[in-house]
Picture 1 (cartoon, rainbow, N blue to C red):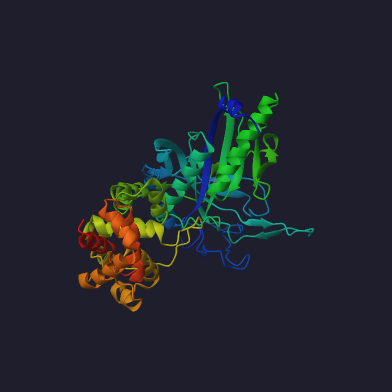
Picture 2 (picture 1 turned 120 degrees about the horizontal axis):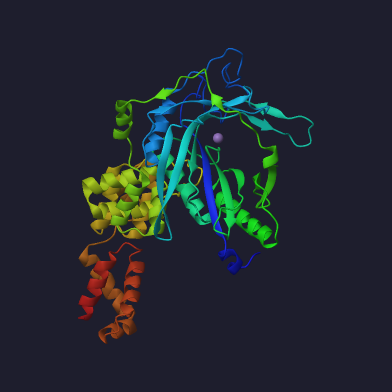
Amino acid sequence: MISADVRAAYKVTIGIECHVQLKTHTKLFSAVNNDAREAEPNTLISHIDLGMPGALPVLNEKAVELAMRAAFALGTEPQRFSKFDRKHYFYPDLPMGYQITQFYDPIIKNGQVTITVNGQEKQIGIHEAHLEADAGKSMHPAGKDYSLVDLNRAGTPLLEIVSAPDINSSEEAKIYAKELWLRMRYAGVSDANLYYGNMRFDVNVSVSKTGELGTRTETKNLNSFRSVERAIEYEIERQIELLERGEKIVQETRGWDDAKQATFSQRSKEEAHDYRYMPDPDLPPVVLTDEMIAGVRENMPAMPQAYRDMFKGLGLDETSIEKAVDDPRAGEFVKNILDNHGEAHAKRVALWMVNVAEANDETGEETEWKLSAENAVALSQLVAENKLNSTAAKEIWVEIWKTDADPLALAESKNLLQVSDEGAIAEIVSRVLADNPKAAEDIKNGEMKAIGFLVGQVMKASQGKANPAMAQELIKKQLGV
Ligand code: MN
């Protein structure tokens, strides 16, 4: 471990490349199913994906539309002219001998993403983002003397988002990665399921205390926000330790060993490829008209920041806001309630969502959600009218979330409705005061602390169904305070 003083002398510079798998039905250049999750190896392939001689790629229009949406989600607009290039290298999972990508004229340039770190806003530049086809998968069975190749993934459409080197800590990197994840989901560009590798991050890290950029390493294929943060932390420490010992950083590609929580060297610059980029003669340029761009712009859904602002307006704290925006459905749901039923209902529903609903995890897989706005508001109304206390309301919420049952009928069947009948509560209060003369005396003497205890006793005697506000009023009334 290096000391905090030594570490503080170094400036950390980080750039991130993120591969996003686009939510299309078919591959980027062939009419083959793009969902390989359940498929047997090498069943989702065509002559185009295999690079058979004479096979000609045909660009998937949907992939272009999703890239256009991504441009708006990244704070810019798509380029009117872009085209495809060949990136040559040899690997068994790349049958064509080259990857089709956009090198010279990418579809997205000069975007920006705002992140909030410790309450401070920071802009991260998007250098460019380009469309490209994924390669297949190589597998190396343990203890065997052969490798296997599965080409189901070959030709899957990807958008590679390249940030400017504007990131200066592992925390900023994690927040930026998560912001991309949110925006790609809100924009409907990707399922962004990290478990299935729908988003993969490559992090370029360098450190320097001279003011000039240091030699960087690239750690590839990180598939969780946590591993992005950990891998960067590891690289920062490793690089500073080397420099402090007077050694040099080797520019290289590294991998991340999740079990060891460490990066490891994969290949150095000497082994780096010359990709011999050249325009792909099989594919015409992509030319977007103003009308096409305007059409996508008009249909862009709201981005997470709009919902953050809404939740903030409802009085949610920072942690709750971040939890609420994790599920793109939540903001829309609460906005509908806010617009049509007012702030009090919207706030109650937002808080139930954050505190009670099953949290969405990093897989981006969405929990089952049947609840309608009508029944959410009906539940909120029962609380507003003191017919349900907050504990009972949460119990109802958990159920109607999945069933959309009528909250009043459910509360009745579970015997959870509060007693707001003044006569019935007054009777219980009299009994409680008679049973607790000491507490009653304290209150008469102005020691109001005891009132909470007595309300608790009333709640207990009513099996939790008394309206606590009314109980408190009646206690005061009967004691004449
Ligand atoms: Mn790439």
